[in-house]
Image (cartoon, rainbow, N blue to C red; front, side, top):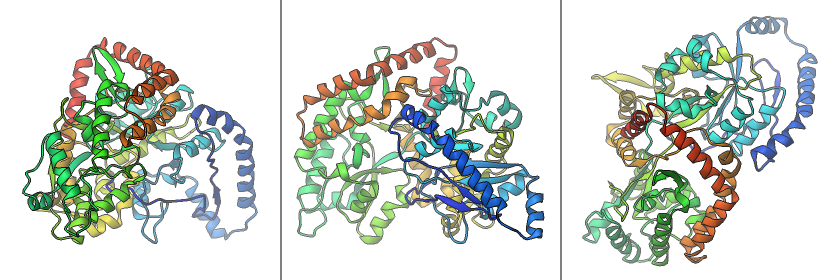
Amino acid sequence: MLDDQQTEIREESEVGNNGAVRFLLYTLSSPGLEAMIQRMISLRRIAMITGLVCLLVLFGCSGNPRTLEVTSQKSDIPKITVVLNSLGIGFPGPFTVNDNPYLSDIEAKTGLRVEVIIPPSHRYEDRVGVMMMSNHTPDLISIADANWVSFYARKQMLTPLDQLIARYAPNLKERIPPEIWEQLSFNGQVYALPTLNEGIGLEMLYIRKDWLDRFGLKSPSTLAEMVDVMHAFSSLDADGDGIQDTYGTSFIEDLGRSSPWFGAFGVQLGQWMEKDGQLVYSNVQPEMKEALAFLRTMVQEGLIDPLFPIQTQQGMERQVIEGKLGLFTGTWYDTRGVLEKSKALDPRAEWLPIPFPKGPRGSGTFALPPVRSYQVIPASSTHAVEVLKLLNYIVGDGRDSLKLGFEGDVWSWKNGERVTDMKRHNQDHYRGLYANLADIPDEAYTRSRLNSLGQEYHLYDNLRFASLNAYPSSFRSLPTPAMTKYSSLLLNKNDMLIDIVLGIRPLDDFETYVSEWMDEGGREMTKEANDWYHLRRNQPGYEQQLQSVSGQKSGG
């Protein structure tokens, strides 16, 4: 699991180890994948020109004969090019993405040369889409967007992997759970290999216990009790500074970090749910209107920071650290981050994890999709075998060093338990970029890894709790053509929901939102989702796969 994902690596071009200049070609255009493909066709000529420039640079430079000899020897080793997202992870000097001990170890153990390209994170999917249409496609692309994978699989621009996996990546084939394969396949063929989340849960609810004690309040469990507590936090000078500058809770942009409140009404933003034998989109259900009405009232009563629509994750964490929120939705690993910082700034701050609020339709949070990222091989690559050998090593013999760090340096055994040197762990955090290419966790390994980071943080217990209370989407396949076409456009309509919560729009405008959503692609998406659903329900083993998905809630 990659715990911290905040900073950014930017790389427009770089000079390789052999002195050759590599040119990376990107674009910031194309609001939609279909339109993007049409525009990118014209970039083929640019890519050809770029290739000629590269040749001129290479052959126009004189070199040391000894250097040329070493380069000739290296050229006999298979080389693969990997494109991945930085995930906000940087490299400590003097190391770089292509010059560090972990990549050197991978190359030594696999007999491969690996060149890693990290495009700028902004609009990453569009940038790697440009690469797909160029004459210089990479051998492996790591991508988190299922719509992107679905689009290029339907265009037959990705390599089918079924037969290759069995022969060249047996470790991967053995460890990927049966219910995951459908999420990697199109028309019965596998087009991607997954990196999986360590659990389907992400969010937890934390409350200032010292504030509860200050006002003689007990820890709340129902929506009504939550409201009473937040009234105290927001109106009774909870931080004792004589200024009314605290809130009961807050969210972040796009209604992020709000899922426990929706869960109390039996819905989650952006999820498909089963109702009366059909799949329906939760955003357009009557229960969603009930949840919006509840949040609207909390904003009107001053319990929620009204600036949440422009609040970032980092901004809300700053509110937590500075003592401006008494209750917030964080992550299961915040005990090792923002809560420690809050305590460091104010030793009185005592944060307590609490159950999700019980409402008229239950409780819980949204579930992460089981697949965290997809690894795909462009159809134009001639190194599919080498790529699979690389991934097979990462998920097998290379797992310990890439997930945990080098034994004896970053971590060691003590009394039968792994113990991590946190300073070295943080210094070598970049190794997670390579581990993320083929990360298939299991429960025992996850428990050992998380406990090694400090059992006082309760990371494994938190992950398990979050996963047990997370409810997955009922659509579990690669996105349909309509989803690929309309999802991003319809997502923009969520601004109407935010306006309803803020009181800018009347509550009855929810019906307008539903009507527009259905008319502008949602109806077609719903039909395709149900075509998949009814076909899937009639296949043997469907119930067993449902049980497997439920089993992921354990965090394993």
